[in-house]
Length: 291
Image (cartoon, rainbow, N blue to C red; front, side):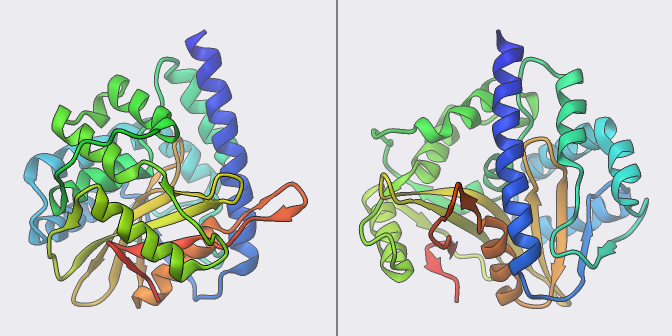
């Protein structure tokens, strides 16, 4: 029963990821994508140094790197055969998103692990940014959108958090009710207002922020963080660190500006349902609408 549920969940995630990727190819307008799946120690050590410089705890960094290695150990051959990733340093692609073979990655994961999902984007971003989120209220609303996340946190050893941090995770990521769903600026203000009600605020970190891409559901007027990652300004680049998908790889991408990051996220989440296109996603940097 557990395995069948996992297959159903993975299938839904795969379809959603495929739709997102198709739209990303057609809509995003930026230069060649420079990225790494952090399969080599040099890139891992570089990312560790950047995280350490930005005051991410050593324990969380170690857990993050361990999760990367656990994933890559199992999936790296598929990655290398599929997209010919570099065994050291950064790779590049002329595509607008890295063209992972999501179906093969999913099938390979299910063959190996039948009892739990892999770490997703929200769990990964929260791992690295949770100490910069203040959350002083316990969420009491509907957190049904986080059922997969919470099951992963319970069952995947790479997704463990303290009970206090799980409460913060739920408070931060639970869907937000909004009005005027065709107005991004108003939605952004409503997100800020709801976070304020939940007593969520952000500690200042001049170089690092969390980028949250909200999907809007017209039928419920809720918005929900469909994809998220960590943005870090370095002396040379803007690094965006993410878990690309539930059974997809970890990825660090170099951008020249935050506008490029915003465009990448916007087009990643631009998708279609049936015959009608969904409303544009809302891209937030901490609690501010990205311009």
